[in-house]
Length: 260
Image (spheres, helix red, strand yellow):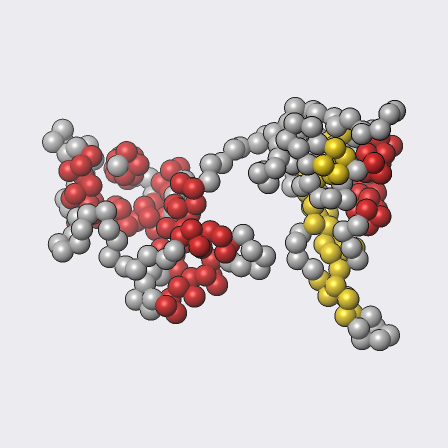
C-alpha cells in the first residue's frame, strides 16, 4: 500500500506512468492498472486520515464474489516456472505459451511477466556489486554447445562456448573450444588476455573442475596448472561462491596447493 500511495502522490504531481514505474522499479502496466483502480474508486492524493492501508486495499482490490487475496484468473505454478527459467534455452515467452495452452482464459503475456518478476523478487534477494575498471573478469562455459560442421566430411561436432565478462564495463569475450578440459580452459584464458591487451587483478571462475580442484567457501584449492597460469600472469583467482553467486571479494589471492 505504501507503493500505491507513492504512485498517487507522483501522479498528482504530474509524473507520467513510465517515469513512476522507473522510479518505483515496477512495470508501467502495473502503474497504469493501479492508477485506473484508484480513479474508479474515487481516490485522489492526498488521502484522508480515514483511508488506512486496509481501507485502501479493500477499495482498490475487493471484488464481489471474489475472496480477498485471491486472484480471479488461474495461477501458474510459479516455483516450477522459476525452475524452468534456469534451464538453457527457456524464456518467459515459451513458458507463457505453455501456460495459455492449459489455461486459454489466463493472464496475458505482459501481466504474466509482471507477476513472475514480483514472485522472483520475493524469492531471490539481490546483492548489488560495484566493480572497479580492470579489477575482475568473470569466466565460465555457457552451458550450451554449438554445432561445427566439417566442410570436407559434413560431420557435425559440438563445441563448448567459453565466455568471459569484465565486471565494470561488461565487455564480453567468447570463443568455441572442443572441450572443457584443462588445455582448452587455460588456452581460452591466454587468448582472452591477448584480446584484452592486458590482465585484470582477479579472475572469477565458477568452480569448474578444470580450474578449481576442490570447491570451498573458505579455502578453495586451485588446479595446479591453473594456479601456475595465474602465477605466470601475476593475477589472483577468486572462485565463485558455492551458491552460484560470485563472491563479493576484497582482493583474495588463492594460495596454490603446492610449495612455491
